[in-house]
Figure: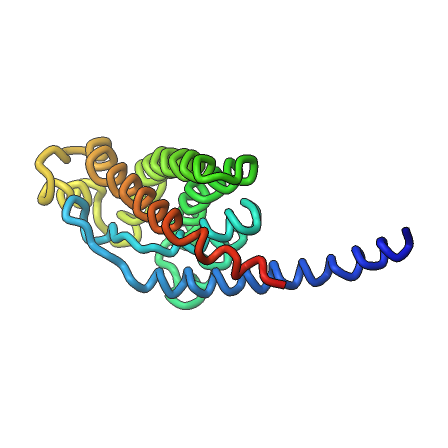
Amino acid sequence: MSTETHVVSKSQPKMGIRTVVQIGMLSAIAIVLMLFEIPLPFAPAFYEIDFSEVPVLIGCFVMGPLAGAAIELVKILLNLVINGTITAGVGETANFLIGCALCVPAGIIYRRNKTRKGAIIGMAAGTVVMTILGCLLNAYILLPVYATAFGMPIDSLVEMGTALNKNITSLSTFVIFAVAPFNLLKGVLVSSIVFLIYKKISPIFRMR
């Protein structure tokens, strides 16, 4: 019994170190992916899709939702150090919450049911949560903050949406026709990539 206890106590620090290393590695990949942004035809230029949530979601599946949230946090902090902020951290906080809204629910559901079906349900649930939270944060926090940061009224941001979609005539329609489709598309694309590559790369994270 004493031998077993000794073995367990020696293995625990190694597990912790490996987790920290994996979090750091996935965070580094995420910050690189943030550099590659894709503009969308239905949203203003300041809405661009990146795939930095792919390593975050992989981290959630491999190590659990808390580790995924840690990866998202490190990614946001690294981006803050590299690029700075024009919103006194408000935009970065909102983006952290939106990223976690996709990945953490997916990680929780997958942890309880580690099957393809569990992964799909988790990612679908995360996409819905992210879309709802993204709409709320954009409507009540992000868009007003960015309007203030750029020194323009919210109506000017709405007009940028109107130029792309005539159905966008107010803040609420901006959220419905630009923000919601943006988050839905991002959730679907990120989830599809993770679904295709996760089983192939997950053994790498379990190597001892």
